[in-house]
Image (cartoon, rainbow, N blue to C red; front, side, top):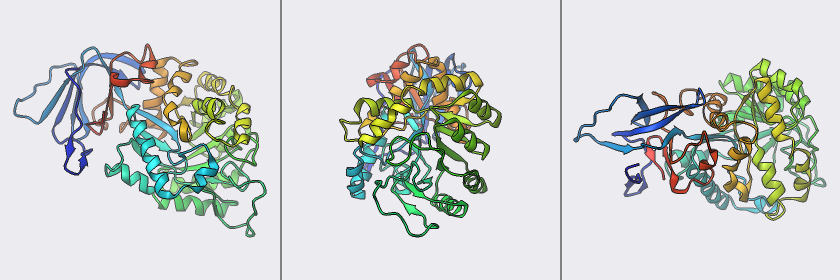
Length: 428
């Protein structure tokens, strides 16, 4: 590269609007995320925040144009990474402390988490429970220098399910029809309550609806093997999402929970650590995707106690810790589309890029990159918008000194080896 790209500034702070002039990235080796391979040297032309050309031909630059030209010779140009499962509002693993944080403190901490994600090359993330419309607006207005934020709003959980974080001896609710706010989730029992809870999230601008279809690790009263929500409740969420041209993602571990969610019409299964061959075949037949989140189990086991995570969560992680990689292998062999997520909490967010390394233990680096770009774009319903270096796509790009299809670790601690571009603006 001819020199470092400099962030454009305005009098009021960073100007993150798409560049109205042209940005020309010359002679970089482009990663084709659809084919999961490098396709040779190309010049990428950006105008108005979008890619307008990817060409082998010379690109003329008029000296009078508002054109920024960057020589990317010897470097790889790939789409910005997409993390399909984050929790940016979970700012500490100490859940007791989290519950006592004032909203202003949590918002500032969430902003720092988002900014770290962009520095690591993640230009779009899907929050799977907790982030509100204010955080999304702050990113869109440039108040937070973070990735594009798609929200699932509050996750939907049955009473006593993964979203029910009340202590075991907490008083219950007297009304069976009541929707209870538990923080990052809404407790909604019965089809009517699920419909109303889903409608509230969609009214608030949620990108998708998340349901808790099995027990989980970071909740006190539900065993991991518990299969949650009835088929009717799951279908109610799917129907409401479809009416808004949206979709449902489901937290699910066990084969039974996975099959029930997929048969109800869920688009993506989150985690899926206990997946078996039968459940994988059901997913393939239905066109449902898997979003593994291997790094969060490693992080909980390695650092949960140090960061104040409740002991029940550190204990329960053993039920799924070693199974995640085998689930990826089963899904891959069955032809399931595999995306990429991290699901990290609080102090462990800086380990986000380690997911790439863990996945590369059971997939090729090029497959992992495809999962984090083109596959995730399909899961999010943003084909052609993000996850590709192609005309018409948003200009979310990484320029990397090194070949991540050969050694994916160049993306894990890139330092000065990576330039991040979002919406045609250089962010670091």
